[in-house]
Length: 244
Image (cartoon, rainbow, N blue to C red; front, side, top):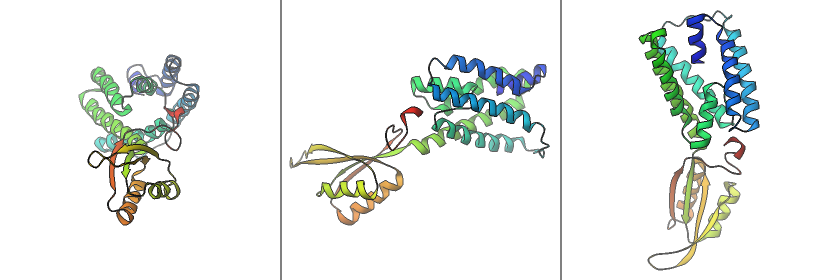
């Protein structure tokens, strides 16, 4: 998108056409790493973005004079939308394809990669768009990247929960029947009294972990519960493998 805008400023080509051509190049390059489903949906998204971008230039939108407001609100909306696309295992095309390849290979956060890529492009383009516009661009890049990562983390993060209770089966039944979640029983032995038993391990949403905590507090106040953040969970009931 940034390159397309720069091409319009320098030689006047419609950014919709430039965007479509650059997307084709990036798709050919990304096809070596990304799966077919990702590529098919990205092609559809790329055509939709080019069409909408061309169409919206004909709509007389009211002019917003505060460019800082435009940079923050516009990039926050875009970051939220792109984050949802990444969550479903696709993207808008362009540099997002390169970001997806890097994410798949190295597991880096897409928002931060996006910030680095776009800020590099802005630095290169200062001579064309001017320092003031570049600074507004830096703000937009940062807000966009943070919004993307926040959307992804809010959907993907889970609570990794360990529970030791006097009645293991009752806790397992609560997790299975009330929370509709699976769990794993780990054979364990106490380090002090050497009592043998089981440690329950499960992955829950934040709301579900609160319900489990309330259940233990009411029925098993002597239970031991540990909660930790799981940044990403892939498997049945959580993030699908095809979206990795």
